[in-house]
Image 1: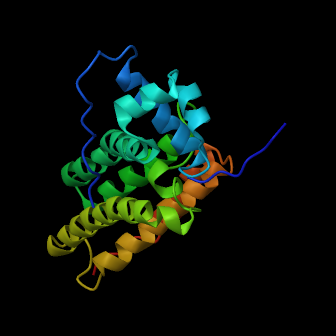
Image 2: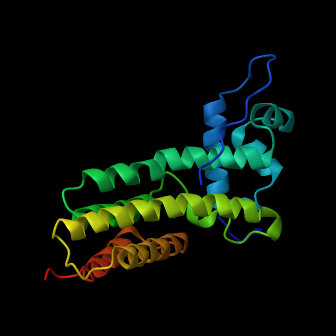
Length: 214
């Protein structure tokens, strides 16, 4: 059986579709399937034939509804961001403590990264990791999403320092980078078929590094 190598600022709005005959397919369903395909195989190694087969449409329908492969990818990233990244900021904000916020972030990643309902790992972390220079601008776009998440984590940790939950000597930026590195490693482990239990063990070890109060 043929094998293949897995690869996985704000996203621009979805392109406007030209006026004409109404679509003969469910656009939202087709976009969901495109997102899952890009998530599984990455941007560059996903062919047009694979996309149209997964979406259940023809190439002319894809171009009519989404513009082209790149625009489809960006819209798929936006969909992923709204479904998965969108929860991160709200969870960080409503968690009663900074520790609870990071614990929940990691615990949910262990569950989501190994869910059988979609490809393993994080789409944003893997979809453009092994791309050619021609796709460097897409790497910049996804890096912007990750940077926004980092800023949210830094802000929550700094709030924990300001409120006295964390020691005054704690470095919010360094802590955020540490836990984001853990998240990145969890994505890699999930892509290598680690179980949810294994990732939860990683979370438990990572939380042992939480700074003690003064």
